[in-house]
Amino acid sequence: MDNKTNIIAELYQIALERKHTPEDNSYTCYLFDKGLDKILKKCGEECTEMVIAAKNADKDELKNEIADLIYHVLVMCADLDLNWGDVENVLAERRNKIGNLKTMRVTDKQT
Image (cartoon, one colour):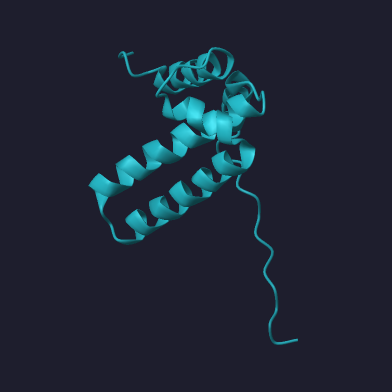
């Protein structure tokens, strides 16, 4: 494992620290100060920008927009006191469901 393995969990911890111990000139603290509506607005903006970058097949822009989206999602989780470990647990459970593709229902459009 390399040193990037836990970067998301580390960034979540930093967001929690900023929430409980604000620092001057911190963008994360600015978001907490503005409240959940601002954080959610940024999540939406970053999601849209990620979709556009993907649609344009711009990998350099895409990786940056994905990083922006993840950061804002982490801030949202910290603001709502949603433990990032709980999200990781859901992902771990889903990882164990490999090959669990649900059968798609075919609709007869002729009737």
